Length: 267
Image (cartoon, rainbow, N blue to C red; front, side, top):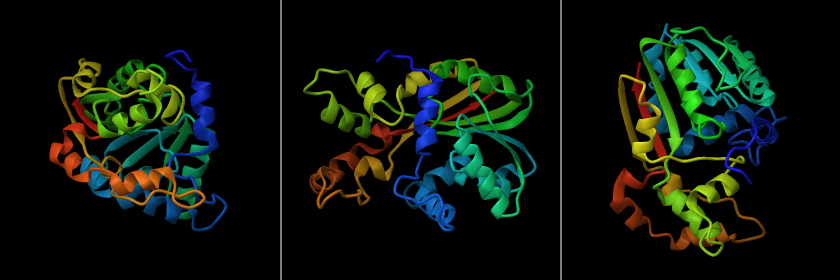
């Protein structure tokens, strides 16, 4: 597989299974409640602390990659003038349905992160959680983020961190015996085709056209295996790994080797 994949491949992957919906029935009335509970059960404090949804009441906010709308609906509930895009028609459909069921309205449309259909200098905040490392040209997407931000506006973006426990686990499983690089393993085996991850230094370089940039990794329950994996036919390999996983060692290194790289950048 080449380093760059087509957007059609990425779209097809996420359209078939929107992020966080594995094992959930999209036709059940409880789908949105269950997906939101799952979204924040593990990452809730990290997401809410980073996004600060209620701080942007009355502000123009763009979310890139709305998925099933769990984060997007927080902006709307908080009173932001929220706009959302997703590469997949399925994500847009689900987010619109979620808003409708809550009696809320916001602008949600299919869109391309590398070619945003918004004017220059328009938004107070552009937010994206775990999305821009999936688009083929992440650098172009970040320049689009800067373009649509108003002067003094802020980007809050989560990208995957390459120097992390999660990346190491993926390499040990898929790359060690096959002599594949970490980058190739992430590209071919983690989520949609072409997935990338960055060091904090690389992330700051991606945002070099911004006036002020902060990039710091954070540990999540996925780094420490502080969750119960889904077993298949009894005790899965993942469950066995969870039982012997060196959580104490992982925590001793702190956030430096966390999977989520949280970036705040001011235009």
